Image 1 (cartoon, rainbow, N blue to C red):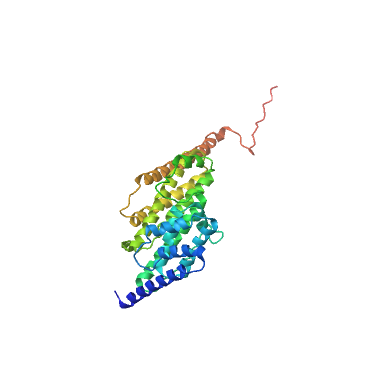
Image 2: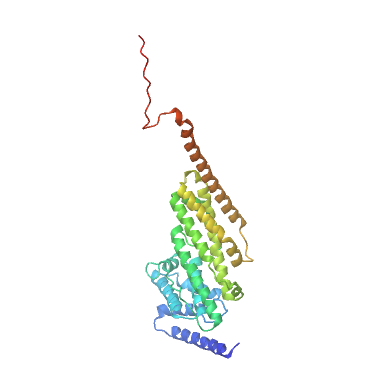
Length: 337
């Protein structure tokens, strides 16, 4: 390791310890414990992950009142936006992701509407760069992508009406979700499918440096995102099942919109395979996508044939019927005398 890099890492260790000491001796006892917990989750170390019990501490501290939850999220955001270190930023985003997937509703609510009304770019990391060296420069691209994925995660959650939560104790109640979806209009279902496809497309924009998954931090980031993708598949399958039963009632524009969504989704398949290599594939999902697309295309073709038939029928019998604007040629009757 280069001496310059060693010195930088040593400085980061001292910086982390100094921050912990300041937080510990702070006179603001109400926020001190939260700040200490966040700092311990988001050290400058390039490969060490936030330990599970550290994440659990943050989740527990944020489970109190709304002001406590607000302080917890503000502390993480403050750490995220004030640091220019790629490893600290990734760990802040990992902590936020754990809150979204495992935290209490009050914590998720604070994340979703931070700073006051949420939005697609509330993390504001599209221009994040750590220029310390070539490695941190490349890691910066993972920070920007991960922030974009989390923003899209929350935007999609608001549209479909549920968070992408994956504790083992909370499985998706498919029957309950399907029952609720029956109350939605076709346009609402298509809007939700479009949002889910947008989320998948955002996931596919991962950096080309997939070999960085050898780093524990990046590997964990990709693992967490893969869980979101798996849940996206489940949400998509339920909604596609609903629309498959409604194809007779879909307008031509709605059929075209659904076809475009499915085509966009199919274009993501190869990239998803590369990103989530060695992870379990859901072949049933892609079979459903293909079957649904085939059924929609058949319905469009069937309606086009019916329209052609309707246009041909008047032409076949047109010579027997006097159309509007046509005049009858009356021959004079012969005079019988």
